Image (cartoon, rainbow, N blue to C red; front, side):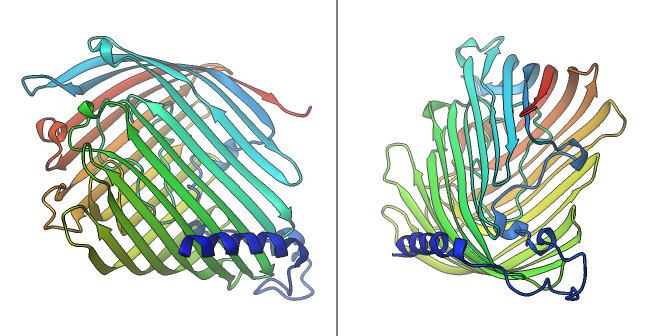
Length: 451
């Protein structure tokens, strides 16, 4: 019933929005202020409700209407590629080749970004893990009218390792909204398919008021369950609706309702299902157009169903705090989230507390450094369910140094450290730590579009 209601709300908003116009002046501005233009009247969509990640590049690196292509070669050494028959971690060297292509195009109504990175990874010792990789990302924003915008984002990935992607340190997404991670426990090398998508509509029905709705989905599938003992496939589907009010040019407040349904599929067992309903209020402070702080919080209701166990229902607090800072040669983003969620490969439902950060800094004309970090604690929300893990924690970080050699040629070196502690996860119990060093060489070219 809730799903049908959400669909009806989105459909009605898309029908009536083009005929409605914004009203009154921007909060905090005088009626005769010449700076109150159409552009200044347009409200921003604060991070707690946008469903998008903070930018991962400095504002001086952003561009539109271009075609970007190239080739990336990476070699990496990992001390924990897999676990041998005697229980010891196996180290290995891998080689990856990534052709890349991206199109960023902007028109008066549509902004579209499409990137595709197929790849091929070869392992020196464990050649049976050789893999062809796929990485496709779509991002569309279409302005139906001056005050109505629809958006769609989707990311598909086929890979043998979560570490195996170009620009690992600077590509980790940090969101301003409390969303469950698509991967909770990291298998150093595991063939998997993952997909995550978000679609939404926003309608600014007055100069300082906006409403909107969105839908999200994720899917995680391990192609070879024997590589990930203790983990399983999972998927999620959700929807949300929000109201946002601009108190002044820098201050936004509002409320949101979010529904999510998580499905977990233990190998050879019946599926586990978790439904959550979250009502929260949010506040966003735009110190500058490129610097913002956001907080949101409220009650979360969870309904957990597991085979052979009674249904578990509970109310718990949900909270998210985030910030994003973007300058010409620097960006920094951080997020803390406390929610009840399921999926991510870890079977069961968990109280999760996660902290994520990412940064990029161009220290000189041809030199830049990037980094990302994540810390997470998971505690089983159904402690009497012995069929699932009781939880655990993980901490990871990546740092890299990037150097531009010529106009089209650049090099990067980086290091990743991962520590995990989870019970009932065999490969984590035997080998909880992973250290990975890599070097990559890339050739890139850029061509303007429409010129």
